[in-house]
Length: 392
Image (cartoon, rainbow, N blue to C red; front, side, top):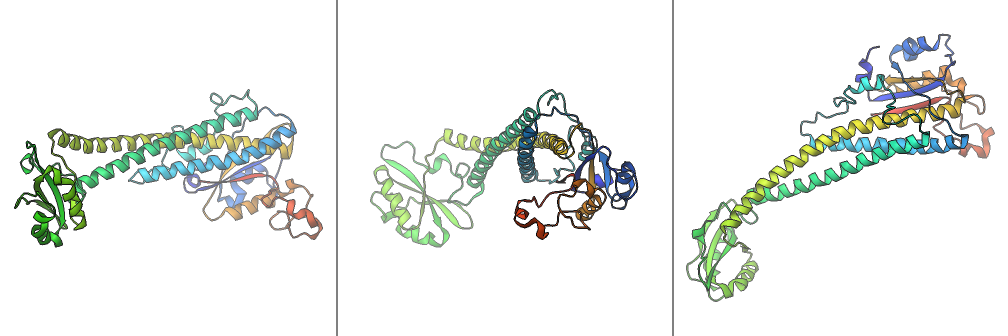
């Protein structure tokens, strides 16, 4: 069977029919799915579904409802993982079509799907299998969230250190700008304050810094660095006046920088940046690795849930023994409605005659006045046979 449609579409149908169901167009079922469905445009493969342990009718009804919910939540988990992959991978080459599923391409996995009886043993009840699969997906989701948070924290830390390294003089780290000679470090009474001044206020600063507070060393201000917006000065003064001097600077719209010269501190600042780069790289790589693995595992879990759901619904619809003709159909873009209409036209009779049906679509006619107050109780998504849309 050609895989071209499987590769080129995002939409599929899972269809389950009674073993002896035949299309109304006069062909046999095999020929219909291989050649006649929507004029042969759709590609179809057998969907391998094992026989599970069937409990009571009440059990099946409860499992049907739970499977529907878990089907949706698993699909949402996969979408979140894809979002993570696309946000982390700058090359944008991690779409579902390129990621392997069990060392297969996605089309190969869909065509060759087989229940993993080693991981999800068939001697368990449907409810136990459902719980095992869902718990596995929940754990994968939890791991992705935790690793995503670790990466987000590392990314934020790197952004902060980048800002310190490459920002303007009001925020950037000064470890590679100032030297020991710019500070008074061996005096009992004197100290040095660093002040960042907007270029527009440079002259005002030079005219006023000596008189902002008492005990400023006259003519001690020295320009140390300048960028497009600010200029960095050092000013020498008595230690007892440092706090008042910094407060007075802020009132004049000068920006005092808290900085105590220390060789150890400078080395620490250098190491901080290097560590931030390394941590961001490592956490990003780990998130990408985990997300790719989680995508594959969640996708596998999702199709095991689909398999269980098709089986349960088929037993509820068609009864026992649980032997069904199950297909996965790759539907070309923008043809889903016509493909479904073709299927309903040929197999709509499986829905019986409990309600009046539209002659063209085979679906229940909800405008049928004979339904009266019961119309609101009818499932508007009801199909005359087991059929599920899958959108990737």
